[in-house]
Image (cartoon, rainbow, N blue to C red; front, side, top):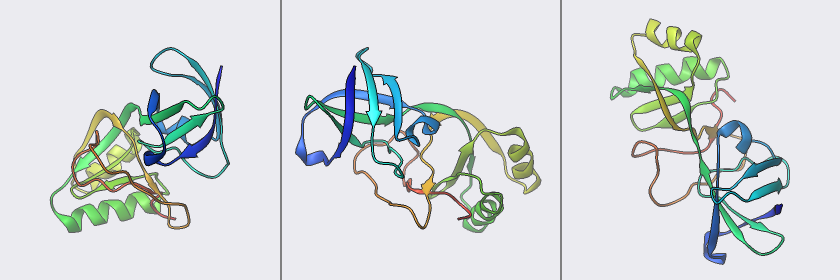
Length: 163
């Protein structure tokens, strides 16, 4: 089993594998998984930091593995009216919902009760499969990655709304 033990910067290494995981797993500092090439890996990282789409991890043998956010079932609310979108984010944040916020959308892990609340605010949640990159929180480490993203354009990464 390949042991992934260190985070590295993009400029430091050549990528030799891909680890695709949903957000629930990427929150953990220690877990077992399988790379896209079929190799088993064990992740052993410092506690307190979430793995983000595009992060790079170095194995004890020197291999560098890129992390990708797996598509998962989410509810996305597309809204071009900034005040309505802000109001939605306020109500979801008030419930301590993990929330991904973009220029014209808010996304959360699918929940029919939250979907009903969104509808009561006059908005329409769309259930879809998409990578989930919630905000990291005002008191957590924050960084973003340049390059293409599977999320809608103008996506900001990093906070847990309501914290």
